[in-house]
Length: 334
Figure 1 (cartoon, rainbow, N blue to C red):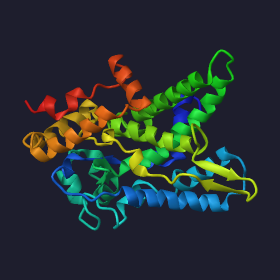
Figure 2: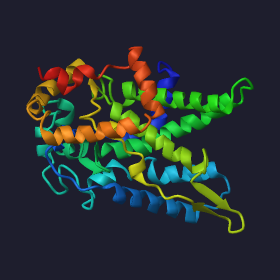
Figure 3: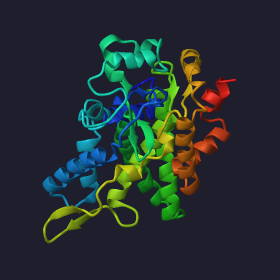
Figure 4: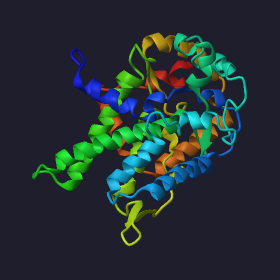
């Protein structure tokens, strides 16, 4: 592919094989004043159902082969177990609600007036609804990032870990950290190019997407690696057993909420988004908003940040990723 950097080609191929490229934009501000029921159990049940079905059919004794089969079921193109499944599922409480006129969502969203989203009937598939999991608001697109982005991170991790672990001067822990860093930086590169920040795509750099990608990676990693792998092979029965069911709530954190963990935008996008955000200046200090964000801060004060969040903080200090602070309500509501 002459003229295309190999890194771009690699990322494109990985994304095209997963659901991450199917993810859309979302607007948590739109749902600020709307009640939502928790959807964590429905999503967990959905994932566990597909995982168990894979295990019942799998004959290989290789754990990594089983993980790839699970990925093929829940994360790979063209299967739609993420955002698409959620968006058109009447059992998932979401804003806008199932069966509503979702074109109104576009007109009232922070993306109103931006040509990419003004696509007639396609609007219904391009803006992802807001759901709630364990008291945390998130876009339905984060499920696609969790699965598709997580699969992309894990596949890159496996390849890079093998390379680093072969270095006699590098410990297993060092190889693990270096391989994770490679995956996260691959995600940053994809967010800058194929998925978001590029002028040709949406002009949006989503830190929430990157956190969902990483949390999905930790799920796929847990199947065969780490302390107490989730999958166990029973040789006498020639089958795999899921030792611990997937609980989606364990992976969702406040950084999934784009109104709390805001995007950065290209100037072409930001001019209109900034105008649309102005209406929330009068709401940002209301009790229901502050109570939710206080709850988020309490969670973050009692849990360690993910390695992705730590690395992204370092990259912001180095100015190698966009600074989200100018795009917060605190910055524009003055």
